[in-house]
Image (cartoon, rainbow, N blue to C red):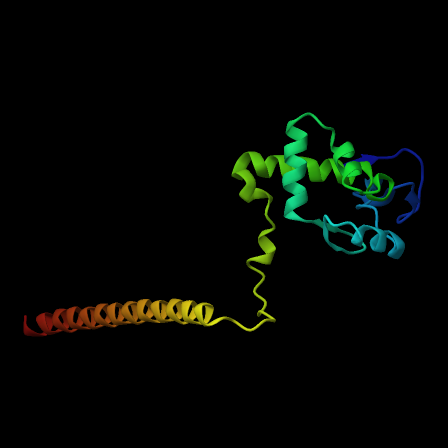
Length: 180
């Protein structure tokens, strides 16, 4: 949300966690983005077994923690209590981050069940694997590639056939006009 302000501030001036900007000839205040983690806070969070990754701007929780969160929340435990019991420093994460994660996970769980809590990025990153594939995995990939190429080949054959039919129809219609 953008909140209009009544006193004069310079563009870019910080007021607490709000930023003053200019919008259509008037100053407005926008709430700043999430709290950034310091290097010490990142190290502290990385030591938690329920953390997969931490950067200055974001934290990625494990799927196990998300499932634990949903289970305890459904039993009536408050989100901040669940995070605290899991060993997270509440003052480092901040109440807003905890509340937003809670809302996001509960919505995903209601819409998709436990599958909504899994991190989809690890399955569809598009990056090549660092490990060597097993024979079964190599075989499955080759089989999928073969099926893809067969389907593509069939499509191209049909396309070629349709193109030849169109040419015949066109030449027949030209031939019929010339014979009249």
